[in-house]
Structure formats: structure tokens, C-alpha cells
Image (cartoon, rainbow, N blue to C red):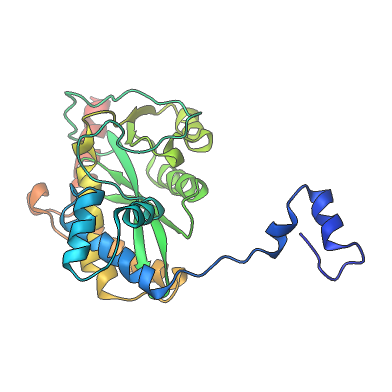
Amino acid sequence: MIEKEHPVSVTRQAELLAISRSAVYYRPRPVSSTELALMAEIDKIHLKWPFFGIRKIRDELVARGFSVGRERVATLMRKMGIRALSPQKKTSKPHPGHKIYPYLLRGVKVTHANHVWCTDITYLPMERGFCYLVAIMDWASRRVLSWRLSNTLDTSFCVEALEEAIARFGVPEIFNMDQGAQFTSADFISVLRAHKIAISMDGRGRWLDNVFIERLWRSVKYEEVYLKAYESISDARQNLDAYFKFYNSKRRHQGLNNKTPNEVYCATLKLQTDRSAA
């Protein structure tokens, strides 16, 4: 956008584009190895004790030999997009201008594929940095329908994952999510409304509703991510593609009567189709 070799000065180009001159010269500061190690340790503690808040995570870090204060832990947790999995006044931080939808699953028994889908975002450590993973999951079967990686907590990679899931698997009756800014954004909500999907958002006291996808994150990290040191997002994407194929087609779940997500998805989808045709 800005051409430093252009006859027009950098200052004038910045004025014409309505951006500050400092932004032209800004270069992102790389995350230090110390900070990356600290974030990786926070991630492991959060997975082991997801109900730990900032203070308890700070105490555990200190016990493990890290010299860190509560404010720094809070800052890193915000950067990583994680929070304690426990009842609290705000389970996530929605954008102040975004509409919040009611929770629709109270008393609902989810028994078949494409009845309810859900989504969440998690932090993934890499060898020289980190990225974020979003997944769309079918609630009844635990099948991962789509996923995307991004190096920022923006909205576009969440919308891409949602659009892929709909293109490949149709539409669910209900889509459940938390009140995070990515999911309450106009871009994300417009896709759901365009397909006439009922929108459900976790509210106060509904923290357990995300437990299935939280279990997915634990499986992904301990069975795949922590065993490897991804060199780049492309490396992570290639390895995660293989893992999710294994997860859906080979990994049996006790909660699914020792069946795979693919088996339960296909069986309950056919059952629901047969019922609809009857």
C-alpha cells in the first residue's frame, strides 16, 4: 500500500490513506522464547484444570518455577483466548455492539446428527510462535465437521469453517456457541440466519455446555499437538488434517458406546432421515 521508493513522500502517502506515519514503520515484535514457554505452560495447566482462574494458574506457574505475576498471566490468557471453565457472570467477552441470542438447549435431548452443532476456538503452540484453531462439531456424534487455523483471533477463519461445514453436511436445526466476539459478529450470524438455523448462545450458568468441544481440545493437544513442534501454520495444517481424519474415523469413544464419531453420525443421520420420511 505504502511505497517507500515512490516520488511522493511517505508522510504524504500516509496522509492520503488516512493512516498514521508510525503505522507505516511499525514492525510486530516477535514473541520471546520465554513468553512462548510461559504460554505453553498456561495452556497445559488450563487443559488439566480448566476450572482454574488467573490466580490459581499463577500459583501453579510459580510452583513450577516460573517468576510471573497475576497481571502478566491475565494478559497472556487474553492473548491466548482462554478463560476458566466455571460459572461466572460473563463466560466470555462479547463485542458491546453485538446482539446476544437466548440459550435454546435447556431440557433438549440431542439424539441425532445435524440436530445441534457447536463451535469454539483454542490456542495452539508451535515451535516458534502460536496460532488459533476453530472447529465446528456435531453435538450428538462428536464428529468434527470442519476446522480452520489462523494466526489472529479474527472472524474470517470462523466464518470459513462454518461455510465449509454447511456446504459439506447441510444445516443443523440449532447452532450453539459462546458469546465470543467472533461468533456474535455480523458476518458469522448472517451465515446462520441465511440458512434459517436457530441460534443458541451459552449464558450465565451454562458453562458445561461447551464440555464436549473442550474434551476435543484436550484430545487434539495431548494426542497430537504436544507430541510435535509444528514449524509453521502449514505444517500444523497438514498434521491436523491427518489427526482429524483419525479422530472421526478411527478413534472410538466410550461416551459413544465405543463407536467412532463417523459411525454415530451416519447411523443417527439415517435414523432421522427415515423418521422424517415416515
